[in-house]
Length: 254
Image (tube, rainbow, N blue to C red; front, side, top):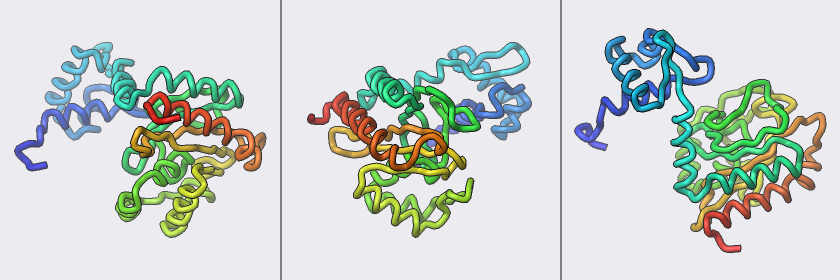
């Protein structure tokens, strides 16, 4: 994009929206200005504009996001023909397996949760729609990476930083490349403690009309109550059926 086409005011406004995150859900004007590198006056104008539009609320001292920001999530899903239909299918997965199920999409080095039905939390931190997690630490992230073309994956791999979160985190790029090759053959991915020891998950891809991977669906559980064999024998068929049904919502052939 050429510099004349870049709208600085829009970029700064979006940065203000993006500065509200876990640990910073409610902030003062001074805190918002500091997190966005804006002057207090500029930050104030952006915040009051967002308040007028309904995306931010305030009590006169603190500012916070409103549920209206979730409109972007639902609109994003609707561009793929997803939404309520996908949520109903994910709910069925949770009811069938008695475990939490989620759907996520790829965004750079992270996955973003776009749908979730929680049965019982298995993570120490809460997971909800909008939560972002490092791609290489999750089964959905691995499935989404496997859905990239070889060139796309190589470009991603060249720029990525494989941070270690647990002893099971993948930190070697050659190992990750071999794993992605295997996931492409298998059609699913299992993550065993890559983000949090004691938590494991299994994921499959969701395809669009062109057979491209646009999202992933998973089931997460505690390692203490579910073996890897159980995940493959019991969870995988349910997930594959759910992914097929969501793909059908997108108009993919039976």
